[in-house]
Structure formats: structure tokens, C-alpha cells
Length: 424
Image 1 (spheres, rainbow, N blue to C red):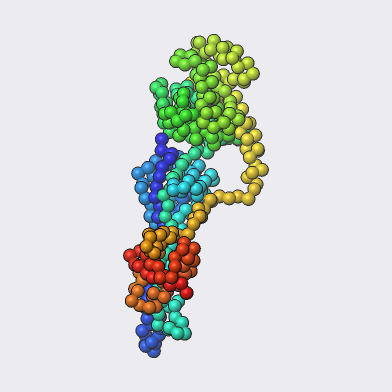
Image 2 (image 1 turned 60 degrees about the vertical axis):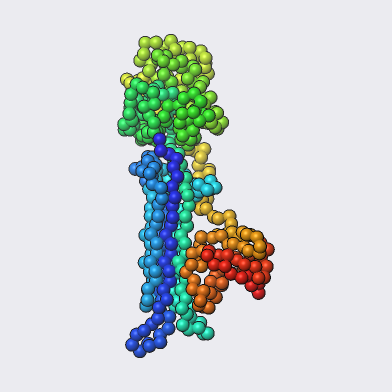
């Protein structure tokens, strides 16, 4: 079952600004004429209701958006990089894998969220003309696009979930009450991925029903694929607990107790979820005997008797589930009326750089973004050197160096360059 994967995303870098001059008839010395670089492409994630698993992303290691094109002469902007839209199933949670921060929780059809923003294009030299310097030979490099290692987790969004041990008839039940076509067989673990179907009642009501893969003893502690299955159950409003009442291979009372114990072990809140207990395979000749024992053990528990194979008794289960679901929906309404926050955009908790001491009055500024800026500066040109220094000041690097204890005359390493710190 593919519902928890990691993928690296990298938005496009902005294009570099252009250094150009206006050389046209009647404008022999027309001044700077370089355009801005194009913006880097963004990476979006969007819900696609046709997708039910994250399988398509299983072998995708990285997703990259297009880079912005460099600026051009005649003040023309470079072309923006192409955006990338990644289609994922409803119920996908997107986290920053580095720290676990929640970036987005996609819970509505067609919901679309910006995850990685493309870098801005660099300004062309036409922006840097001043009264003292009307021939600037400097243009900004493009800004680096955002990049993250993401963890994608799929938690199904179903109104009701079928739970129970393997081979108790959950898949048969789903196939009878919906148009879903799950694999059905007599051996355990036929279902290894959740199957979803829509139940439509004659009174025009309906709900989404999910067939959860069969649980085993120890699932709440992570045995088998327990945690992967149980995380889906947490999002169901109602649980329909299918029990094999034929007693051919299992004891119905023990099965009921074990399943509920596993739910509580994984998450105590699952004990509070509304649960409909369904005695299946009542067409078997010994089912009534086991049902009497079960009711004696749980005299206050309402038990619905069905045969998924012959479709007997199923309507009563569906109507009961529908009523419980509507009650659960009504209880959720007050929260839904609150101000809606769809996207949890990750905001860095620290600057894009780090100042490290290397001893002997030497310091290093660690930042991929600043390293790239430095590599594009021609330090033999005072104009570019000045612009670079102004950029560092604007980013707060001067202040961070002072706060770290850098003193006048200390050496500061940026990328492959060593500079003397001058505290003016």
C-alpha cells in the first residue's frame, strides 16, 4: 500500500537580469537598456478525485519547475519558467520532511496549494542608473527558487470505514452496496489497499464507504501494516465492524475484543467513534449458535444480522450508518463555519544563512543563495562589488556578523571568496 512517500521538490530559479545598452539611430548613447530576468516556475499540489493512492509518485525522486530565462536587451523581460502541478488524492497531507511542519492538508476536491515558490527574476541594468552613474554595468542575478524534501501521507476521507479481521466479508459487503469492484477471495489479506465506493440510498442520501485492509492482532503496535491501515480509520466518521459469525475459523467474541483493543492501542479517540456491529455470514448453519453466545457476552450491544453473499439485512446497516454520519456531520458544522485556513505555508524560522566561527578570527557565512550571488559578482568592478555589499547589508548579514562577534579586520568567507570585515 503506497500512502507514505518522500519526494524532493525544487521550484525554478529566477533568470539573471541583462546588462545592455541602447544603440539605435538618434540614440548613440541611450543609456542602460537591459531587461529583467523571468520568474522561476512554482510547484503546486492539487487534489484529483480520480486518484486514490500515491502509487504514481512512488518512483518519483524529485520534481523540478522551470527556471526563468535571462533578461534581454531593449528592456525585454525573460520568459518565466513553467509551473508544475502535481496531482494527488483527496486526503493527502504534505509535510516538510526535515522538521515535520505541515505545509498543506488537502481535504476538498480540486483544492490547489502552492508548496514551493519560484525565485524572482533579477533586475536588468536599466534599474541601476543614477545621477552619479548613468552607465551601470551591473544586473542582479535571479533569486533561487524554494526547495524542500517532502513527506506525502495519504489519509482516506471516508464517511464510514469497514473494519474487521481478514476474510470476514468486508470486500463482499463493499461490492454489494457500492459500484466498487474490490478483489474478493477466500484467503487472508486479499485487500492490501483501501477500496472506496459511494453508497446511494433510495431516499437520495448517500455516503462514502471505505473497505480497510484486514487488521491483525498487534496492529495497534505496528505489526504487519497496522499503522498504515489505522491512520486511515482515524478520518472515518463511523466504523462498520464486520464480524464473521459462522465461527468456521475464528471466535466472533475474541475477534470483536481484539479489534477494539487494537483501535484503542493505536489511538484512544477511536474508542469514541460511532461503531455499527454487523454479524455477517448469517446464512451459515452454525451462525445462530455463535450469535447467541455473542449477544450473551454483550447483551446491551445492538447487532445487525446480515448475509453479504445473499444481500439479506444490508439495508438496515446502511440506513443506520447514514443516520450516524449525519449526526457526526452536524457536530462538525460549528468548526467548519470558522475562518477557513486551507494552507499551512511553511515559514522559515531562521534566516537563509548561518554564521559560523572557524577560529583564528575567521568566519564563514553558510548559504547556498549567497554563494550563488557571490559567484556572479565581478569583484574587479567596483560597481558590482558595491552592489554585492549593499545586498549583504539588506539581507541582514552585516548585523548577524556583528551579533556573532565578528570584529573589524576579521576575515569573512563567502563561497570561495575571503573578505576583510570593515565595521563602518
